[in-house]
Every structure is written in C-alpha cells, then in structure tokens.
Length: 620
Image (cartoon, rainbow, N blue to C red):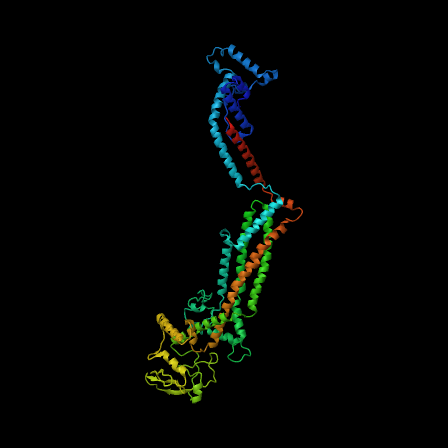
C-alpha cells in the first residue's frame, strides 16, 4: 500500500541551499539520516513521508523522481541536473500540464519543496516526543540491566576467592550473632535447647510419697514438680494418678530385690544406682533428637545462604554445596562422639562434688515427702499402715525409760531407719479406763499434760513427762478437743509464721520447708530417704547435662564448622592449584540466555545514549 523513503540531501539542493529555510531543512534531514544511520528506527518511530496510491498510480516513479534518475537514465549517464532540466521542459511544453493553473505543483522541485516543508514541520513536532521516548527507553534499559548480574571483569581466581571469603564471613556471623538480621539461626537453636531441657527434666524419677495409688492424693503435682521452674515432669497424673509413678511400696520392693549381703536396715548401693540409671535411660535419645534438630536447622540455613550467594554460578554452587555437606558430616561425627562421652560419664557412676546442693535438695525433698506422710496419717480414719502387733506385758522401769517408742503417741514409733524392730521391748499396760480430759501440771517441765475420755485402749506405761521432756513438749500440740487437724491455708500459714518466730527467738533459723523435717520417723523412712536422695541427685545430674551437651554442640559442631569452612572450600575448589584460573573460569560460567540478554541490553543502552546526545546537540 505504501513505500517510504527519506528526502535526500541531493534533492534539497534544487530549492537552493543558501536560503535560510533550506539550511533548516538540511539540518532536519541530516538529523534524521544520522538517527537512521545508528539504527534509531529499531527503537524510535522516526518521521517519514508516505506516498500513497493504488497499484497503477505511479508511486515508484514518484519516489524515483524524488530520489533521482531512474535506472535507464543512469545507464545513459544522465546527471541529476540534466534530469531536472528535462523534467522542467516537459511540464512547460506538454499539454495538459502546460495549460494548468497549478503549475507550481508540477515537477520534482515543486514536490520536493512541498514535501520538505511538510517533513520539517513533522520533525519539529516530533523532536520533544523523541527526546522523551529516548529518556524513557534508556531508563527501562538500565533497570533491566540492573536486574541482571554484572559481567565479571576481574581475574577469575581472585573473584572466586572473594566470593568464598564473603560466604565464610556470613556463616560466622550467623553462628556468632551480633547482628539482628543474622539471629534467626541462634533463635532457632535456643528453642531446640529449651525443648531439650524440658525433655531431660521430664525424665525425673516420678516418686510419690504414698504406699500405693489407692492411698495417693489425687493432686500429686507438687511431688512431680521441680522447684526452680514449677513445671511438672512427664509423669503428670492422668485422671488423678499416673500409671508410671513410683510409690513407697514400689521402692520398698525394689530395695528388697536389690539386697545381697548387706546388714539389715542398710539400703543396697545397687538399688540407688539402678534408680539413677532409670532416669538417665532416655537422655541419649533426647540428646540425639536435640542434635538432629540443630543439624537440620543449620544445614537448611547453609543451603539457603549458598543459594543466595552463588545463585548466578551453577557450577560453583554445586561444588560448594558438595564440599559443605562433606564438612557437615565430618563435624557431625566428631560432635556426637563428644556428646556420647558426656552421657557415658553420667552413666559410669553417680558422682558429684556439689555436695552442699545435693544435701540441701535432698532435705527439701525429704521434708516434702514427710509432710505428705504426716498429712496422710492425720487425715486417715483408721490405724496407720502396718501397725506392729501390741503385746500386753509389763516392762521394767529402766526399759520403759530408755525405749525409743516412748513417744506418747497412740501408735508405735518405728526405729532402725523407719522399720519397727521385732526385738524392741515395748512397755504396755493392760486395757484400763481413762478419766475424762483434765489438765495436770508436770513438776519437771511445768507443761500441761492432757488425758482424753476415750474407750479403753492400750496405754504405754513406765514413762512419765518428768523423765521424758520430748513427751511433755509434744503434748503442746494437742488441745482439749484433740489434735489439730485439717487447718486451712490461712491458719496453716499463721501457725507456720508463729513457729518460725518462736524458733528464731531461740536462735534457730529455719524456713517453712524445714518444718517438714520435724515430723517423727515413718515406717517408710528408708524408702523416703532413697526417694529424696535419688531425686536430689537427678537435679544435680540433669543440670550438668542440659549445660554441657548444648555447649559441646556449639563448640565442636557450629563453631568448629565455621573455623574449618574456608580452608575446606579452598582445598575442594582447587584454588591453590596451577590450573586454578581455568577452573575458576569454569566455576563462573553463566547461562547462555543471561549472557545474550546482557549483551543485547548493553548494545541498546549505548545506541540510546548516542541518540540522546544527537537530539541534545541538535540546533546548537
């Protein structure tokens, strides 16, 4: 439908190059020709004139007339000036052209004159738009170039070494911390270590100071809770009682099975060791789980960092990934060997030099257990468990005065580590009525002594408050209505405060937890001692483990990995080898599409900058 052709500088000479308008037209045409010469038509819509007509309208002839002689005339050697002269003679002498009133519209010179004016106006109108379009395309080109990685111009070996050093420094930053953007790994490790601590604490021996589950307090949280954090162990009771708990009868049976050649009333050492081994049995699995979480978290962080740092270099990224995985496996083996050594030390033998903490914790546990036993006895309607048989025989005065059972209680007091000895002499009188409650004053102590109106019962004789101050002192715990039981929390705290104040006035400084030690010996005294001591040793041992295992993982895995990483990568990548330059050039090879796109944009940017310069200098 149309053919296009720029108006040539040669045709412009027809109208006179010395006039001002001709000079302006020459500049415009020169600019367009220069823009076409540098390929601006590929990026910009340059002004042009279209010759339009139907198939036989002579478009080609007109274009050839504008541009110069045709092929036949050029073959005869005719010049442009001769062609224009022949054309002028044709329109002046040939009808109907010579008789037309529009002779100024005929001929190449007139056509060029009209078209040149039109093209000049078009160019003047298009120049601001061209400048704006060039600036916009140049900005877009720069943005696309910035999205692509820059071309590598440095020495390949030096460039790869720089990349490796930056990567190693970033890994050290992630491990050591000190930067908020690099604290994700450390925070994840803190969570893993907190979970590890909770798992180790849940292995605490679930001792309950009750003979069996049938006699246990439904709320046993206080006996399973560790003091410092107030968190119950994994044996938190389900529907009142945990099936995995250890009761007094369980511990008694365990001690019985562990006896060998020990003398009576001596707990076998093997019994305590077996209980200690029991709560340590899950520590290895807990340690493996913790280390597996740390390993997986660190490995994922490394792979993400490798992808970020070496995204554009596929060959280098795969080589570094392989080297990092090898180093991770090596450090994992070394670290687990050290963790196993710590766990084996704990399993080898119970040991601690932290004897003060062990004793204090044991005393607290024993006080708690005894308080539970005393409360159970006070709340019991029947006689205490395993009451020894009462013999109705009279003892001598000397025997009665020295008997450890002369405590004034209505049930025998166990001895020899909490068990009543069958050979212990018991001073008992036969059943006899007791007068109604009345107050008597003991001459030796000045304390009030009460008797109670009850049915006939056995009564210990041969001991009087005068020769047993302990009995007289214990009698103050009773009122005329009987023993004080079932105090509410407020009254209990009031009495505890009063007792502590009285003891402090006597120069005895104790705490509420120490009051439980004042309870008399128990028929389960031996079992309570074992439970309190094993539980205390657990707190000594688990505090060591929850500190040393994370410290070993940090030191021999994370920090050791960071220290070995750079040397390992330099060795695996062969950066010190004679052909390191060639190897590094291979590492830095990019995808062909990226290279082609960068070259295309770079060439376009240079072309647009040249066009921008030409447009800026036009008219100056």
